[in-house]
Image (tube, rainbow over the protein chains, first blue to last red):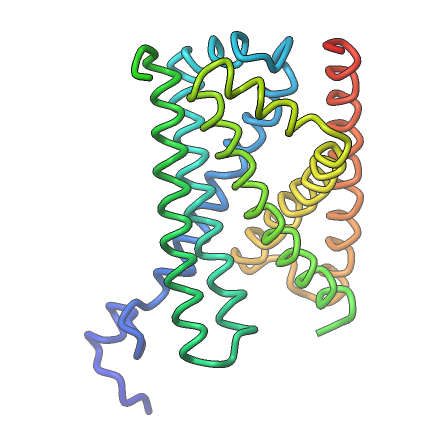
Amino acid sequence: MSLRTPLGRVLGLGAAKEGVHHWWVQRLTSVALVPLSIWFVVSLLALPSLDHATVSAWLRQSWSALLLILLVLTASWHSQLGVRVVVEDYVHDAGLRTVILALLTFAHTLLAAAAVLAVLRVALGGLS
Amino acid sequence: MSRYTLATSILNRLTGVALSAGLLLLVYWLMALAAGADSYARARTLLSGGLAKLVYAGLIVCFCYHLAAGIRHLVWDTGRGLERAQARRSAWLVAVASVLMMLAIGYFAWRAGARTS
């Protein structure tokens, strides 16, 4: 017999009160990253050159800017969730683990914001 | 857990962490691009050295493996392919698929490098 209330079971929440959220978001970002990362690699390889003018012109096409923003956001999120699990598994000291997890979250947020800002600056132009 | 599944699971983590570091490189490249032609040119000398090329080769290996292994995990999540024999077979499939991807990306990257320089 389970001691969990029917409501608790329906909501899917365990003691951590977030249920399968981490697992689910990790899967969602995985699925999104399959086409996004393949698009990015193929696009880079297809560029005639990697000089400033060529890459900027590529990013000024709205599709490239949009997909690249989606890529860096999804990749940062996926990375944050993945690295978090690794830290949770291998760093056994609770205090140190909390500090590392906090720093990693800040770092990923900073990374994602910086990348979006950079893409927008190139895509919209004239903001520098 | 068999030897294969254990090794592939650890490899998936290792390549994932390496790709997180690669994300830093991507963002640095984008920031240099946004900062203008001069800073981009400076970043490019840093990003096109011999050591950098070694890093890209490593990142390509990690990307291909992590992509193939990640798709394997997504299939597992649907409840399929979890039998030991199936898992062993898919471990080989992941290895073959990622090597093929590495060769394809490596070939096109080499061709692009030869074209521009």
